[in-house]
Image (cartoon, rainbow over all chains, first blue to last red; front, top):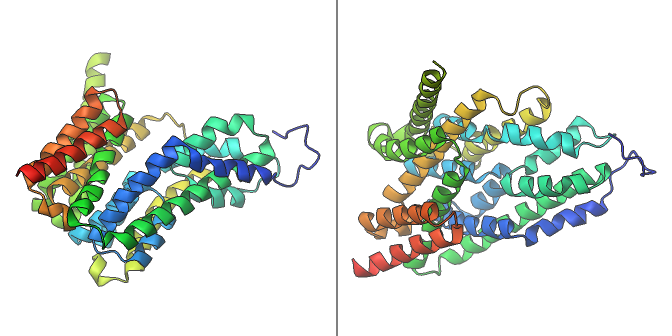
Length: 246
Length: 111
């Protein structure tokens, strides 16, 4: 839908980019950055160099994928097993992107514009943009999202670089506490996102099967636990619904 | 091929960047093509949840580096207490982080 009150229908209103930059001054952005404090400690402990860390944080830009890759590195998992685990954990990007893109599109927006800004999609910028998008003229929406996405990427990458640099001078116990932030945050967050009983069952099964498969199938333990746990929990839902329907 | 056998940047791109980005691009190309509430997406969410849960448990039970100096029962106890706090105390993230970290450090000093 074109916005009727705009004389210029061919360009974006880039002043909305600056409005998107304000996304860094929100509580979710603060939480995101403190989560990455823990992740940077984890990655450094896993042996990643500063260069590898500041490369992987913005290019992957999805914390579950970051953590799966680092876990794959520490357990010596094969590139294919890790890639499959990351792909399965990232499918949620598909419906997230599908929900956001029609709202960002202006009259003259080309698909390649959307392909570029889609790389900014991760939960924090996505939620922030969805919350404000209806109050922004069509020509300002894509710049707004680009602003919110890029400021978060730059901020988080900077936080990771700082933590990695100074981690060496921290006492080991402080490093341990930093690293421990990641499982604490993640356990709370995936429980918060797991609304369905089958999702909560998936969480419990994953937590049980993950360590079990470290012993049985160390080179692909996360992938095996995710598939077995996820399919079992879904099967539970399927049988339960069939019984309720009958 | 594991991380040690490959160029680390190649490993990160193949194992992390591409498998994440393809879903964003597919989402742009598929707009309007898939029902966002489709039942298949429930299965997808179950698998994703189990994957991340498996990693969490691995991080707590088999940590590398600094965290491994803390005894396993302390790590497990602190993680369980942190999650329990989150569930019982009305989804307050800061509180569950605080409880988990306090028990981790307190448990280490007492152990």
